[in-house]
Length: 216
Image 1: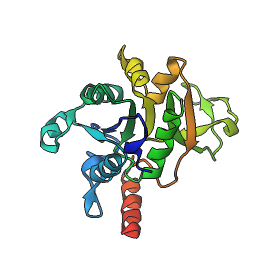
Image 2 (image 1 turned 180 degrees about the horizontal axis):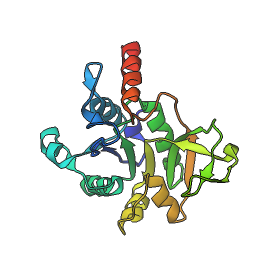
Image 3 (image 1 turned 120 degrees about the vertical axis):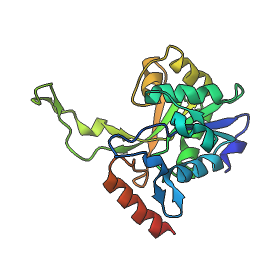
Image 4 (image 1 turned 45 degrees about the horizontal axis):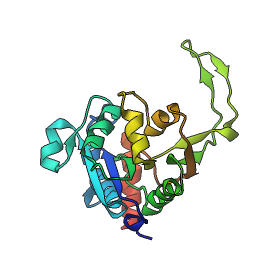
């Protein structure tokens, strides 16, 4: 099913690629991954899964890449993207460009959850490691039950009016679902994908290049 033809829905995606790559050692979104850049992989899948795509980039690159300039934080960058999404969009997805292997199937899953009535939908994987909560002195203060924990990915899909409301007061969060949850809205979790790995460190890029070579 082509998600751009979901009945009575106008789906748009914001691809967030405005980071400086401080932890990575440079702007990873422009790193080559096979014959394309990391950014190109992410935009291609978003484009095939949406009626339109807004790409949020560092200010110095936005005009050249045909995108919009981002802000100082991820949430600010999403708001810059939101401002460029048409008012008649009914579902808005937000995807981190640093996850180049997110599949069209994953987009379909989160979009259809919102179409079915959820305020938001996010992909996630079960947590397999034991998680420890520590204090500022690195002393363990709790060991959460990992059966109730998941590791969240993107793309995340939201009813457009809900996402716009969540960002209206310019809050900050590590993902958009956090802001929607803070409003008391319902966010549904769908099964994530192991291949949908976020490129955070140089070794992640090496892994991704090996995967891109395999897919080619």
